[in-house]
Length: 113
Length: 113
Image (tube, rainbow over all chains, first blue to last red; front, side):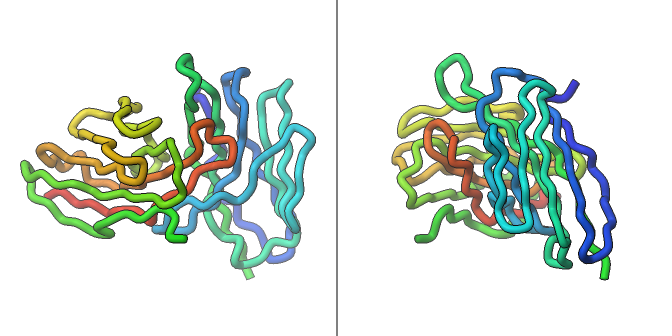
């Protein structure tokens, strides 16, 4: 089983739709979680951190379910500019106390006019 | 605030040549890392560093060397380029724990012929 798994998509959705992505992780000791956005031929950029209580940033909502070991990203009122690949990132401390970062392979979103 | 600066943006090498990819950050981040990104495989960690003078191997270190003489700089050296090293390379930095996420450089597209 991969440490971090995402559905690669693509998710093709019309403008204005709501779309949700899930990401599962295998290590229950994981401590911090993020969603990154990566546009074609560009570097990944931090979209939002994911907190245990869930958090929202405008049209984006992230949730963490530690019991089932997954995180989710909900995008409401999709815009054309939301078209990108969304990477799930999981961070845990290794035996030396330093971070061990694992990236998912990403879910591709295409918002259609 | 420049963030993470990577050079060059593009490079073509012949098999057997060596080169150094440069990475510099101005955020006083202790943690720096190099990733390669290949289609369908996501981001794979090559080497990382938790501070000046301290480096360690990641998931795919073979064929690459790193050094960290200052907090700001973390160059990646390809010893003898091979076609299998054709990829997009990203440098990233963060605090030591990574709890605030990672900042990526804009990437280097390397082709080995």
